[in-house]
Image (cartoon, rainbow, N blue to C red; front, side, top):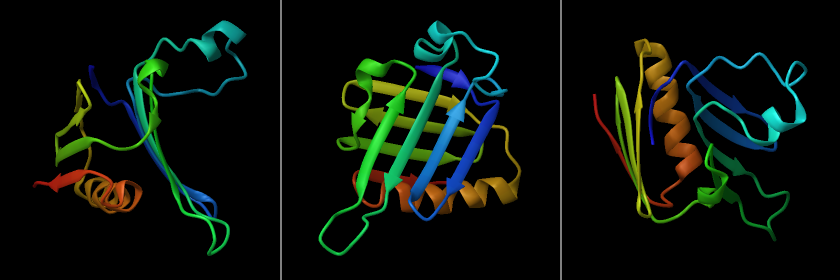
Length: 127
């Protein structure tokens, strides 16, 4: 899976953290048909960490890809992050995403990926 990232979203809320890369700028679901929502045309990668609600639960880590058959629990991966490229090995899948972001967004992405991936695999940050 290879694409150029047109939209990078980092969303940190009380319930969790989401980092998503997409090859299009999403205008929302209101103008899309049901089929377009269920079977999106764009390529995307999303990481999600859902925070536990109390001390008896654990955080949940999830990966979602435009190929839904590859989505699921986040484990068995390695990530190399460069300012202009995101490279990931996830099981037998290789993901290459070209990035065009400024220094501030790159620093935000490094912090967010460190938190959302949380030592579940190998994360290497490169400049």
